[in-house]
Amino acid sequence: MEGIKVNQIGVSFKGTGSFVPDQILTNQKISQRVDTSDEWIKSRTGISERRISSLEDDVTEMGYRAALAAIEMTDWDVKTVDLIVLATSTPNDLFGSAPSIQAKLGASNAVAFDLTAACSGFLFALITASQFLKGGSFKRAIVIGADQLSSFVDWNDRRSCILFGDGAGALAIEATSEFDNFIGFDMQTDGERGSFLNLPSKNIKDSIIDNIDFLSGGFSPIQMNGQEVYKFAVREVPIILDKLFKKTNYSSGEVDWLLLHQANQRILDSVGDRLKIPREKILSNLEKYGNTSAATIPLMMDEAIKNNRIKQNDIIAMSGFGAGLSWGAALIKWG
Ligand code: COA
Image 1 (spheres, helix red, strand yellow):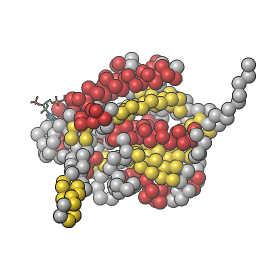
Image 2 (cartoon, rainbow, N blue to C red; image 1 turned 135 degrees about the vertical axis):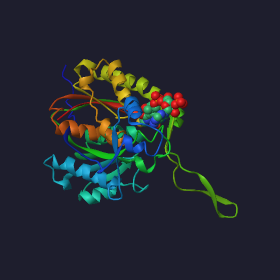
Image 3 (cartoon, rainbow, N blue to C red; image 1 turned 90 degrees about the vertical axis):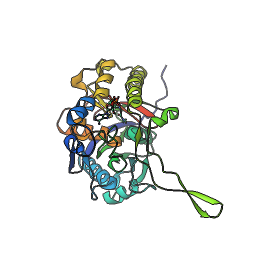
Image 4 (tube, rainbow, N blue to C red; image 1 turned 180 degrees about the vertical axis):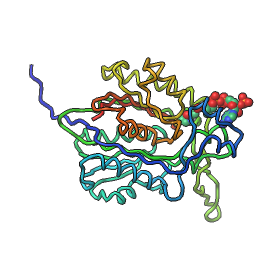
């Protein structure tokens, strides 16, 4: 029996870009501030150094530079971009920084908005943008992950300050009726375990007039229960990827690259082991950048594309995870 012919819209991956600030903070330099050592940080996390934003390279600037580089890899006129999604937890403007990036790009026909899901942010933004493309609403989208956690790290807390750095990455994606390279995704949150990793508001009570109180703005530094976050990641990430493989009829053996949120080398290795994905297929650049939150996945992707490791039609299994708690996975084919 012949079925009804549906005009399906798929997603094609067209370009990548990234940007990191010039300032390099090595492990040795951190040990001038807190009681730690290069040896301790490297052996527990795999991180050697991270980048720190200065005044000139805030989230808007980093996101703009990454987005521009991604567009330059395509043959697009910037005026044909329909959608810009900026994943960030550290916008320059709490009302949203994506429209500022839109303005800097001159992408005057796009709609631009922020999306916050901490270190899962880029993955959630990529899934969101892809749904707009697959639904037929938009044709061309830029998905950006940019974060400046250095502004919110407690630089006197050696248990957390060693992990984080600043940076941005971006992906240019396009709707197509010829194929679909966005194979599948899954996403999850668990607010019950949210207290393991927070960047909470200060909640300092003040009063406007007698008997009318308000909470003044501002945020406290990042609070993290490292061991619980570690256990969460090594348990949930293999489960969600495994579920995605089953749902899409793929196996971990068919994966060319495992691209995880770059939080800790031990997490990357443990997830790879559980999924039986060999080390040489696990992409990692956290030695140079640490955990750049929403930026890690596109930053790593851009590096792997530009140095010709990821090639046309390679299958990439991605997973982002972090505060919320939130986590997600996506299976894509590059190109
Ligand atoms: N330098 C030296 N010693 C340190 C240290 C540092 N930077 N940070 C912690 N320590 C000490 C602790 O004080 C503790 O000492 P004690 O046993 O005398 O109390 C000891 O090292 C072990 O601490 P612990 O917290 O058990 O270390 P760990 O092996 O769990 O490693 C993390 C800590 C943070 C590296 C690890 O838990 C981790 O990576 N968790 C995941 C965090 C993450 O990825 N967050 C972002 C997710 S998006």
